[in-house]
Length: 115
Length: 110
Image (cartoon, rainbow over all chains, first blue to last red; front, side):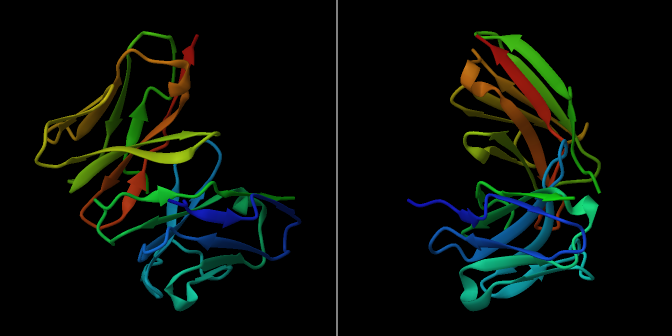
């Protein structure tokens, strides 16, 4: 079974530039998550989708971050403009359902460095 | 906000020894989960324990949960070099979403 795919794996940009990350979840998984993991910390949920609808985006900095999941499959996360503190690994995960007891499967992440 | 706090932050042991790491949390939970993260396989779900369970086993892993103390422990028995990783607890504080702690870094020396 193919896992969660993410691209790119690494990205280096300068502050105030924009960047986009892509995620392809496990086939059939209705729920998709984007997490931000700053070095030395645990992942922090940014946004959760159920199919193509947003379930929770309470911790998404909406002035600069946006995410979409058109057609309820692939998802993109965008940062515009980027700040130094956005340097982190951005993890995408998917699960079969929205309840927290549904196992979440994580992709390899995109490591973003903002200079 | 940080719900789970792992202890210790770092742990170094010899292969074959047992490793114990702890997680404390602040509010009541539906379930608590443990994840492992290393450079090879990324973040992987290890085990879930529900709030009405006290102990759970999976292979060399043993998880306990004490809701009265709001704490959990993860025991890895007969550790191997391949167990070297960061271990995170994640809690669902009745919100449906997981909040991860800062993790324990485990090094197993061959």
